[in-house]
Length: 336
View 1 (tube, rainbow, N blue to C red):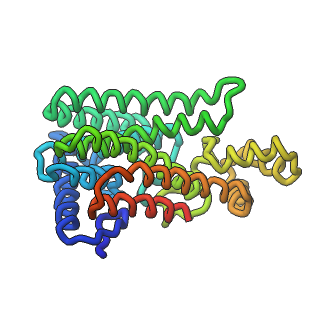
View 2 (cartoon, rainbow, N blue to C red):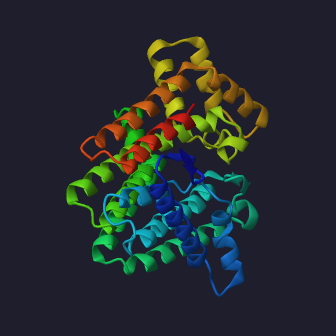
View 3 (cartoon, helix red, strand yellow):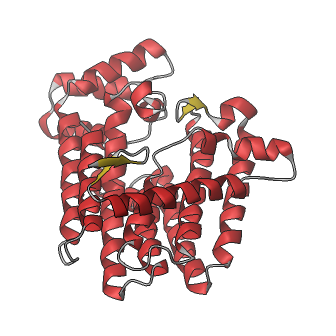
């Protein structure tokens, strides 16, 4: 059993390990090439988060999905570069919206260079992703465009909030399907599609990616509260401070409304107050870490990861399928 990539996936077959390692190395080279500019400052800003590392979760899924066809097909690595560039671009924009100070253990781009440079750098990465995508054909362009529309729609839904009468948790799951599930689904789809896998396999790996992506984001929700910055690579409580309604907080609010416990109402009032003060934020984190709402969010993470695993059932038994199942376990492990 060998650990592959920063995500820490265990692979049980040497041939699969070699394919995945080679693919991820090619993606890394592709990312560096795609983020170079004739303007040195643009190169520095565009490579800021590439150089900071990351789990390369989406490229890893592309490589594993490609195992159900020809993993050496010419479109596999470029499609993985496209999804990771798109993901990186959203991080630059997200950090501006969230006013985040830290990303992947380094200063966020907006902290280092300001909001305007961060937004424009994200746009630059989107442009480079589109340039690569154009060489993959019109079907790939359409798939990415649809996913990007879903991604932006999810972000807008998050900003607008649930409409009157809508369950906030249901609304939030729609947000996650767009913001995170869409691009992870495309990772599974591109890997299988570019490798020439059967249409039924492409559909299965698309559905798998959607569910796994949601589980992945739910694990991040838990980490924002439960971890320190060393574990998560970003400042704990960033979402809390910005008033972003993550799943543990939504569960807390639902419990406070349904059960009316004074301690729950007090915690909700604390979260609704000014968390710019470090002491108040620390108090909120301590209270949430001890609250049943956090464990409820962990259970939801497990449920979505298990749904992702279940979608793989029709696929033939092989090392690649076992690795995809292992990814479900790795996501759950992140959430504790």
